[in-house]
Length: 570
Image (cartoon, rainbow, N blue to C red; front, side, top):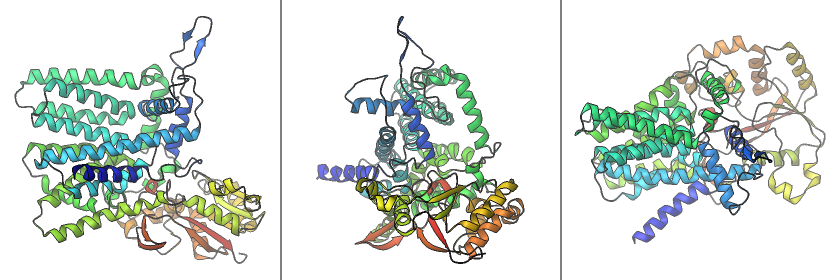
């Protein structure tokens, strides 16, 4: 029975983390993932001087990419090397698809390990020897775990490291592990997390806090242990991300850039959604509901309830949550991935809260079903063809040859793209359309008069307009293609936002208002979406529209694509 039970659990974990893991390939759908894959492709260690066989250490395995550390890049390189049979290390020519898949496999396994660590943490907190199966269901079918498993980025790895640190800290607080072993394990995980992303330096506060909470050590011993922990963690950091030191100037330059973007000191087009956004409120409305579903609200209720508890394990969990949440919630950028390490903690608080409720079994079952539905729906994104492939196939089949098409720049790919199934079938009569496609820079429209004249020219000739995502209209205007409840806008942004956007970007606001209302002479002929949904024999039973969530939650793996056709001259 136990074997069958764990076979089912592991089977569900692997399926939810690995299904459709090759989504979007061979196209670079996720910009961070693309940058990391390109960095993996750069990793090699050629001998610079054949006569003396001297290695150029500054170039040896130097990714020339420092938005993240080298650990995930080296792990991906190692996986590819193993897959190739331990051949040609230091001289491999790695394809883009290989790099992407290696990075995604790391994320998928990190997510699986995170689920198992969460069960161990829950057992420690509840003092139970055996987990409840519904704990596993909630963890397995959590939307954020499923999405981050399919992104070859650092989020899944950072979640795993944060959970692992919390687990070790709980063990020492429970006196189930020796102090020396704890310091070694904590320093190893802290060093690995720092080698993954420098912002995880905040993780170090967990072991430091834990050492201070140890009862049978005096203050001098605790200071010594903290110093030992920091020194050992630094060594592991240098081992697994050496080019942060070797290529110091590149690292510092990247760190300054990323910090300026995160704090809003350097305006860039991909952070415009955070202008006028309200800290904490934004995350509560646009991040947590999409990433966790109903269990997110239950978890926050549990967090509030447990704040007053005096049990050390609960106090530690609450502190671990706020330690990471507050600094990331209050800065300018509020990307979903910035809260990734604490999403599992919200799940834990939700599960603990449900455990504490004195409710009938049938009511608990109903709550659990509603809690896992968003995650089951989220699997549909990877079980089906990428929405950009579907849109492209429609364009090839329905828009005549040589048509004049106006689109938008700065999306990850410009539509249409050749879907893999059409590429394999070699349907030249479909894919060889010779469209006149103009990917227009709408971002600078109000600052550049020549662009305004250029847009008028394109609008006069365009037969179709493609809006490939919400990246421009949702961030520079308050107009949506369909009538949307503006409650999200009222609650998550300063009330002056809409009027200020109209004043700052009058041309953009007028363009989208006229396009969506039909005054521009175009009407929407088709819309492609891949919202999380539950279907039965091709019929959608339940759908979770999430386009109004934080932008990066949707635009990389399931953007909404709208196609407009000219019906009259303006």
